[in-house]
Length: 297
Ligand code: C5P
Image (cartoon, rainbow, N blue to C red; front, side, top):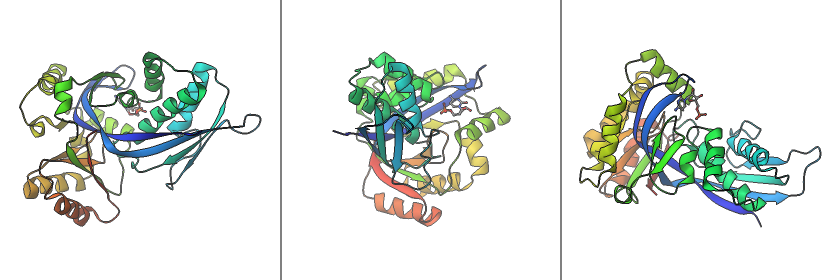
């Protein structure tokens, strides 16, 4: 029997990159929430081995790499190396999360692949082993082992659940996620931060903001949203700040970029203007923009 898993996208509701590390990565503090919007990954065991690749991937979306550079196949190789499992698996990916978006699509696919293989192989890996495997695949992977909003630290691999009361006010909240026809490569975005040098948030300031997120506060979520990767991206991709400013002005919504972009989101308190907001996004960014009206999971 194949295993089919949902791969949620994520939003960085709060992101403070605090500085560059000796290993070239950046330290960050982030509040991240999974979305009800995402991909679907099916994993099916098959006879294999020999000259044929043990792990193969098909995808319904054009342009998605199907070779060993895809995180699904990297995850499968890492799983096999860690467990010694020698089975063969074919993956089918239904792709809805755009790439180069800062929505964690590839990372979410990789974690779904680990979970699917854990089931197919009957290995029942501990949470710690899964976390270690996920962290080795990418900075954004570990968060997808959790089922709700999390706090991320380190380069992203240190993850803890947001306290239940703080998570409760996020879950189910409507958001509109929108990405222009172009993407932003994560290494480019971090590279621009290094060049600019002026955007880093002091660690104690980031921790103070985090304390406000964690507290059972009545502060509106809109007041807590922030992302200090925006200035580097906005300097080059001017279509982003122009649309965000228009959405704030015309609809009074809180709107910002997610992660390293280029996807942005608006937090919706009143569902009535949702169709008008979607129409405004399409008017500004054209039919090639991806727009999803969805909710925090
Ligand atoms: O870990 P991941 O593959 O997502 O990272 C892609 C690139 O983004 C890294 O090679 C690095 O240049 C940059 N990055 C960073 N600091 C992080 C996460 C990513 O500098 N915390």
